[in-house]
Structure formats: structure tokens, C-alpha cells
Image 1 (cartoon, one colour):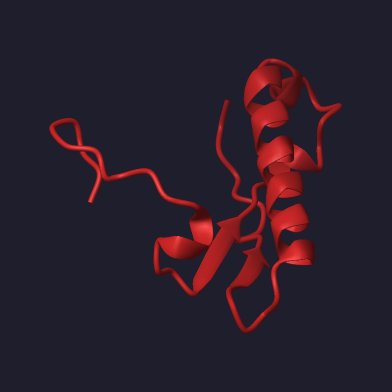
Image 2: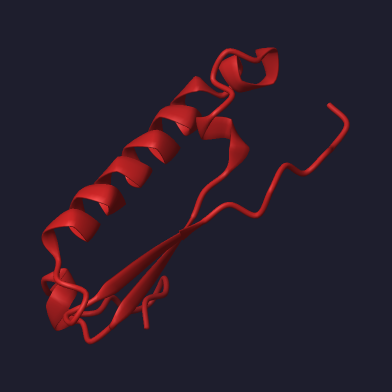
Amino acid sequence: MSNAAAFPELKPLLEIGTKFIINISSTITHSYMQPATTKHAAYTFQKSCGTILFQIVTKDTPVEEMQIAFMHPGLLWQEE
């Protein structure tokens, strides 16, 4: 477990022991031209890069070793 007081030994992803990863997306990666999104350009960029990273790992990792699932919870409305 990682917290402010202790950090686990760094290991390659497949050696950690996890057999699955769930990548949760957000609508900000799809609506990059909206005014609310352009105010948070760095966050949008990071979310997009993370999504591509998981896509590459998914492509290169056999499902017997680890399964990666992507999900999008849907658009949530909030006032600005």
C-alpha cells in the first residue's frame, strides 16, 4: 500500500500481482473544444495520454497475463 509515509518497492506492472486494470475515462477527453475543457487543457491532455498508454499496454499484453477494461460512467451534469 502506498501512502505519504511508505512507498512500495518499484516493480514492473505484471510483477505487482494484479490480474486486471480498470481504466475509468471521462467526457473531458472527448469534448476538447468546449469552453469548460479548454480551461483545463493540462488535465485533458493527461487523461488522453493515460487512455493511450492503457490502449498500448492492452494491445501488447496477453489476456492470460492481465486483462484491461475501459469504462466511461457517462456524462455528469454540474453547474459551472
